Length: 148
Ligand code: DAT
Ligand code: MG
Image (cartoon, rainbow, N blue to C red; front, side, top):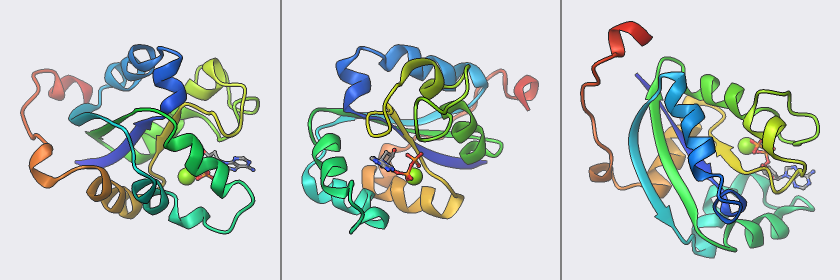
């Protein structure tokens, strides 16, 4: 089963939306494989957003991601990367469709509540940045034959 990294960024924690957003991934049928609250140091933020280095919003993005605690989660399931990206909506909260996390709950481009890996390869890299292998838990879940 495919895994993906989801971050509930500091605005989600500050706005007390951790439960609301986590509920959506949980009810989709994904299985939680890892969960922690992290005050990200700058070095971790730099590695996480390395692909955006040099862009005009990069410094502001690092300041944002390190401005308070982040909830880091690994979700697992059929096409988990795409499933989560669809639940999140597009980057800009104004453009994100209704029913998505960003469409329903965000108005900003930067403060858009959630990060989700954009490919299985990037998911593997990002999971390794935020989690030790022993922090991830594999287990049977009773409704898996119904969820598919
Ligand atoms: P996403 O988080 O949808 O994968 P991304 O990888 O293109 O989006 O960018 C990472 C984050 O950087 C994004 O969640 C918010 C911020 N960001 C992207 N484009 C931006 C812009 N034009 N101005 C300000 N922040 C931006
Ligand atoms: Mg991205």
